[in-house]
Length: 373
Image (cartoon, rainbow, N blue to C red):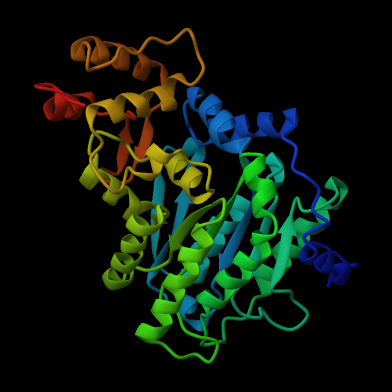
């Protein structure tokens, strides 16, 4: 156990010890580094920085660590240099898939100074805490916080049969309720990322409709606070995915599968878009815009596609022209083609090859005639 482990854990349990988050120049520079590293357009930096990064107060990751997470029906990814290819490794445990995801976001949180707290659903094992945080105190403690997080996730026990998500959601609601007025007054929100295989139990391990109903009620209450709820599912169970997609419509949350599953969902609704890994990571992080969250839910209309392209490629730049397609569709296409020439192709997990962000041919075939808002 690292020195002062218990002292640091107790400090993040006290809601009054977390200093107000300040967006510093270094954090924004590192955010730009991450966007560039993931191949995302620089125009997106302004959009994310002004609309999301400055508005996010902190994040809470609710992490299921029941024995259901040991099931080997998931996928991890092997990323080639420069993200030119992303291989899917099948037959991995759900926990390995989630650990790879969390490892990325823990490093990103530390580099970009996004206060992030992890709440494990069950006790992780002897001498390990269920709650620990990053960027939750003095910056000088960050190295120690990263060490604690690594130790917990490397030594976690997956031997418990319970997945009491409703109980944890209620605790988070209680934790945030006292902070809600201050968050709302400052225009801030907390991202709550729920990582689960999706089948809840009560604290006694019981399943059934009553348990699901209790989870739904707890989420409805949480959604009334200044929060953004993201579900990161670690399952291919269609019944579970359908249940959480129903929640998506009622709670205005974002429900995510793994990279390949989510890419196919987006493709079915918006086949003109390459769903790159950078987009997926932003959505997992709670840093996506509302339009990005809707990509897997419905086909965007022409007005929304224009807005998406403005957010994605233009941001605050005055040097990039993008005509409104409702005024002149052909001029919009020409502007878009010029923009795409400057952008690096992305790995497309649906087609398993490098592609431009926007398939202009597909876009023209879908919207070129009679484009309407």
